Length: 188
Image (tube, rainbow, N blue to C red; front, side, top):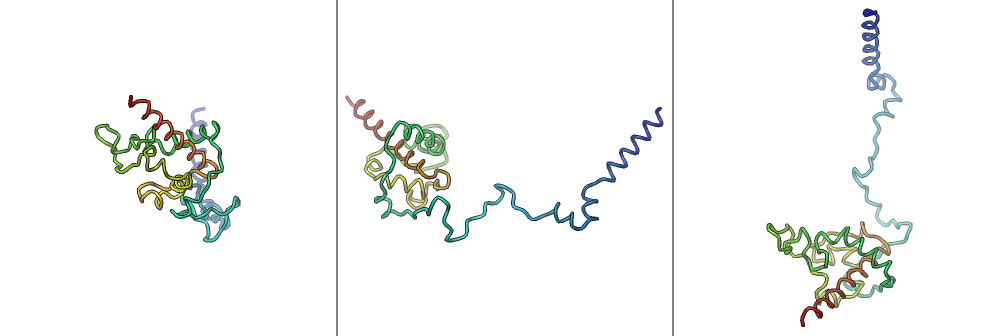
């Protein structure tokens, strides 16, 4: 019985070592190309679109300072829009601009913590300068932060898309309104 078990173990070991897929693949030519093919792995290296291609949803307008002020916000400030904007803000913006939009997020150098965060120059979204800007300007900063955001803000146009951008603008306007009401109510 012991010999038989030992013999079976030796045979099983021989079969396992003989069935190395790489050995079999190299013996059969057409099979080798299937196993070792050139393919693009998801998320390994995104391929940029061919210049001049238009996405199915339509062409993305190029945004600059002159165009930004002419963009009109098509989304009304409904609770649905503001809640969606809050979700997007908390996902992408809060880390730099903070919960109230004052530029004091966890990685901002103005966060008052010791040690301060690594990023200097994070703008407050609730100051008078930004509050006077148009919705189109804020939209343009979201789409192309490098052009509109003084080269400090990363581009979020590839992450925040379509109507979500306007929802984010509506939420920033809500933060600005809260800052104004809090400033006027706190200075008695």
